[in-house]
Image (cartoon, rainbow, N blue to C red):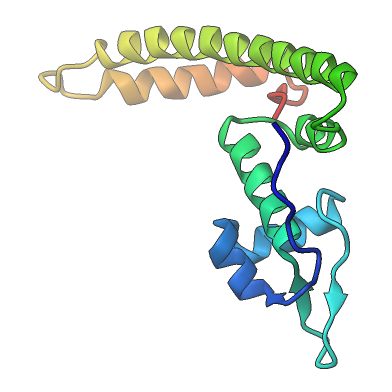
Length: 156
């Protein structure tokens, strides 16, 4: 199934493009800087102007970001041709890779949930001091002693 033709004529200022796409003006500018959206035509007054195709592209980016995809993953999908069967395999591979990231994050979140529950269960408020805060202070010192290096980043 092909997409309906979308107007390429730029006519919407950034505020209207933001409203029509659901992407904030600040994020639109950011996506331009990141190369997810081409630099826009400027009106005589130097306002950026966006076409319906640009607004569709912004919606596509917003949809991918809502699925927690990284900018690189979005770039990969944006570069694919809807009508090229070989690109379908690339899209599938990109989603499989993203599913791997999501599954890893779910494992991390389950471990975090267990840790938070154990921490929460340390204190019922009946002692003369809070065991939760005490444990957090102990962990803060232990982390410094264990690994002075940078905290690992998530893929997104």
